Image 1 (spheres, rainbow, N blue to C red):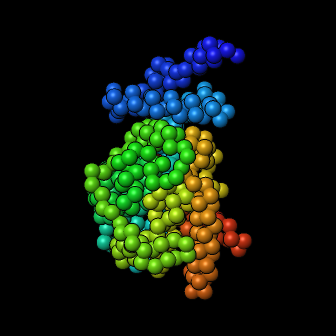
Image 2 (image 1 turned 30 degrees about the horizontal axis):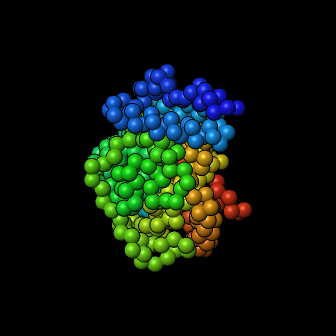
Length: 356
């Protein structure tokens, strides 16, 4: 092939992000002004080129990008569905774990002192979740007095700007939100893919970044296994230790442990995939496809998973001796317990909700 042939081939391939595709996704990027949209299309073009270079079909890449918007818009409003678990805690407290159709769980603690939200879900799900809560006899998010975001992905902090209080997060999470790429603070080799994916998911899901945030402490107080215990939060009679992740899934990710209630929140480092529907698992696989791995460092992520499971089994054994069990609250899927073989099973059967 001559240089002119190569040039001709390149001209036939580009642009991948053509006018037709731009028009197809316009409904999902309405919040971007003209300059922002132009920059996004340029970043997306580079991402498609990189994925094509490793053997992925550009047309399939474009369709999968569009599928994010199609899935989120097709599972909202009158078509919104979710699953939830209502778990009774001590002294009149309750944990409502709401598993959204796309994205991470919303964890709502109801206490005599008010409500606390741990992870907010996508911005585009906020109205639907609030309506769901009203339908279930809860006064929406009216009584929320504390919000904690475990990490910067849109499905975990995307509705933070809608909630009535300033959210708490790791300083690196704030930096990731400011930088506009989930690759910030990591040694990922896929920075251009991470940036294009971050803009896609944040925009399509209508992320609402809060104007102000509270930052957790970062100086280690002690260690719990491999994880530094960097801060503590008191709310509604509960005492949460905040553990800092090793940064396998994303830099700045937090885990939370409430000893008295036996709750371990692992965010996206540990997930009960078996409890998820096929549609939700398929949607979660989009990130793997578009950035080659949902984790910014897969090796570190494996280390985190193994360590969290080791710790979970250790804590569960201690609680069993007291007649209690550890509840594993993962970033996606059902709140779980460990069976005799050490595998995660749903702590109670999730209840299905459909918009009325």
